[in-house]
Image (cartoon, helix red, strand yellow):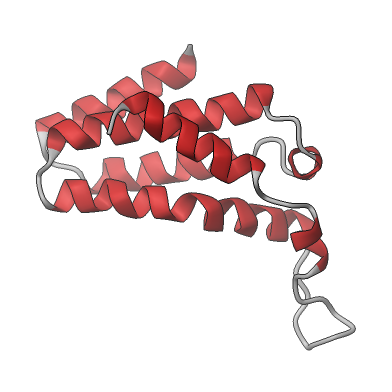
Length: 131
């Protein structure tokens, strides 16, 4: 595994989200719950990216810092590629959801991390996002 492979996998996961999934979400007339489109798009992005977050947490738990330092920046690279290059109808509905999700993930991670290697990885991702 390397950073670019992770980025490519993340990008593919995001561009594969179909806008049709929005219409298949529960809505008011079919059940007692209603999901706003804004909320539904975020949930779909979250579902697509969750396996990458789980892998990152697994590396953290196992203290596999070299893998973590590839997976974290790779995740950010893939998301940035999607936000800048992704040409999907779904992206029109959720242009910044993936970046928002990543921001939340980084905040959660930063609160929990105590290891210097983890803090360095978070710092690298934030620097990468800032350009």
